[in-house]
Length: 507
Image (cartoon, rainbow, N blue to C red; front, side, top):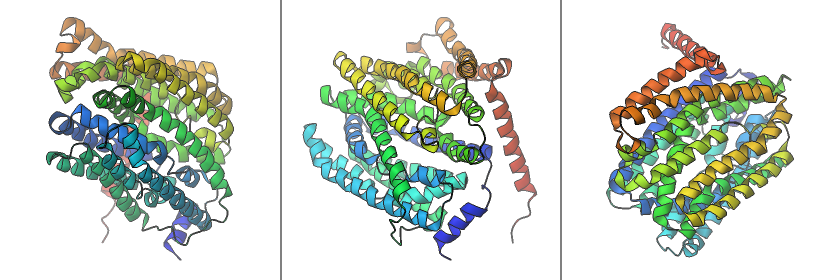
């Protein structure tokens, strides 16, 4: 029996490696550790080695390349995690399609590197874009191995993959930045990240290669891949358009400032809630396959996301100026108001989690694509209208886009999952109350201690810590569903730790 056959047999016959809560806990460990590495790296680079202009150069090249590179997955991860009956032949087909499509996209990105530099009238952008594009040649050999880890809920392996790739990025980027490579240091860091992801995912999956090549039975994957690609294009345009528009209308410094603000806000959002998205997709597949209603578990996910992320993002918004000043220094201070608005926009995006995943799982692809197109058009229109007025208006447009995002996707999720508006509204109201409790100490300190421009590290730590305690108390007082989830997750972790201590060591 081949490695692939053994793996498929395990996926089909064995129960999940861990429960949803334990998988979520491992995912959080992965996200926290990866974030700590990336966060520390960004501070070191920004304070001593990378200027706003150099970050802007890298951000434009990265945004331009990933406009097409985001197509590489082609829905393969979702296919492997969502397929009811995954066989050896289907896995080989998925791997073949993944490699063929992803390498085609990578070669297209490589050929486009010169055109990107010409469009922005910056010859220094070509080598940066070329290195980033070459890194995507490594991506397809990691997609299927990592997807199989997710399907069997093996988030210990997923943690190794994410942390290993973050370490590789940090080590290479800092080393090359010390030697004065500037934007190229960031590009080679991105290359090292993909190389490490490939090596660790292959190790954890037991060396999976796309041989023998097989395209038979690819129709379901191609249908899903077409929808996934359309969604990826829309998401890529929405996510990368600000850097591309700012780079064309303003300059690299402006791009660097916006990239610092938006990147920090996104990193912190993913730190808080993004890690568990991959856990919930296979979990919802099991609920669907069992014929159980999806509304109640979805509302619990909404409660978890908003109960954690809203207070965190609101806290970042009110602490934006001291955060930028203390972490990155005076030359980045113009990013502070941008960070405030971008952080507030994240409240909207997390209010309807899995909006791009569950429609695919429940065969609502056409409805999803229509909304993706409308949302993307709204994003680009808002950018076109606000960019001529300066960076702050671009940041405000992201909050406006978030409001439109909620208006577009909320009806789809309600119709598809069968929950009631009142149920969703109650969750939002409770999350708003715990958010107000969490940020109250910060706002009060600006009146009684020092204003935002003069706030120091001690004021940040004291008010943030007090806010965290008030947040936890508010969860209990308002009867927020997240409180029970936190207690349940802690209980499972303690049980797992006790079990590990009592198990005899293997000879």
